[in-house]
Length: 289
Image (cartoon, rainbow, N blue to C red; front, side, top):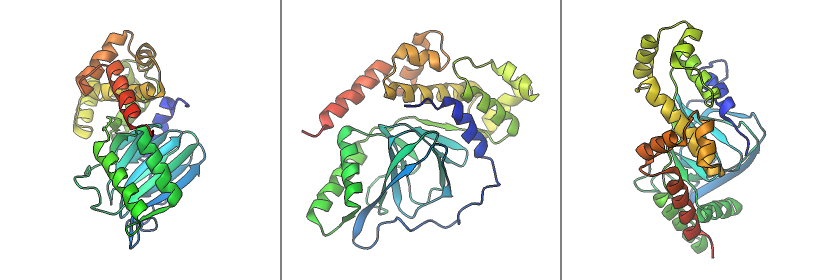
């Protein structure tokens, strides 16, 4: 899987551009389930660097890439989704998608209300092998019809997997202030050897205290907390790829693996190895027999 951390800075800048012709403000209905259909689907192959402009759908959406990494953004928020992870997007949520590398996308469009107690905001979910096969089968069929017994059974299995899917904190918010965004871009682009906040602030001509105030006002956290979240998001991506904890810690800027392990424990309540083992155990339990 290609490394995409340097390209995250590019999408951060694109979030603020206004020279791209926006799609119509109303929700797109083209792919929504029609009468007699509970779930409709879409399979699409995207080349590296492709951008899907801002849009929304009238149905709840699950976006999953069987190959490649997607960067999904809404307002000033950014989600990163390598394979094994998918993004739940509630109906009406406006979002954009960027493909840092070639992507094989598979999407489910669920009739609103089909999934009870569904997440109210965009959420990254872990995709088990069984869940992946269910998505692939639904895409192969195309539309799951309410009067077809097999389609209803497949629908119910998909809903069960959605209800039990583990959320993953692959989310970060970006500031709007151009100086703060430049600092955020610089850190995202080079986490392994990132300069200090003081050095980053000097580059954009602003004091550290001013920068901290901007982050608290626009992101809702201190720069230090935001930086830890970025590192965690990148670290989870690398762990899902199968990298060792030691390698992951170095790539996200920690000299000692124990510092990354502590960050992980504080956020997810377990060590990286335990978390990866739990995902592997979940995958094993849900593998088709």
